[in-house]
Image (cartoon, rainbow, N blue to C red; front, side, top):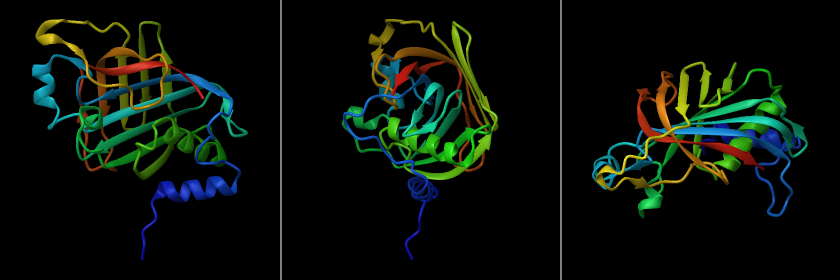
Length: 224
């Protein structure tokens, strides 16, 4: 019997409730907010470090969206947040280096204040903005989410995860440092960040990590 993922079930239910799995090309953006991500590999570094990390790290990431205002196909999402925690079988940015796409399992954390239809819309929105990278969603957990822009840093905290990204990343030119990757989510004006805290302690993905003090983050505003 063919197994159906949690995410597929969510999208079927969402469709029945009037929430589509994607937005058609050319539709006017109706959603805007803030985004931050951090990976378990540096995104701005020298080739010497990248060569050592490319095949062994970068398999995990936390992606977080905070919606200022707007709706996802008529489902109002003002002030809500959603976080995706990813575990891949290889570096999540490997396609940018000419390699095969990672097979990904994802744990989703949706804003506890959202009603069931809003929660499904948040999951579908995250999948769209991450260009389908979420892969197999193994868990969807409603929880309080704190997404805060402190001016010089962005922090995200929820059950089982925490993220702290400084907006001031040192651009050390040693070892020919350069930007190797782009954000995992659609982000028109992405900026690089220094990750001072990047922790996941949940059990759903079969892996946990704490990966601080790396130039491994992106942040910025999105419009959809």
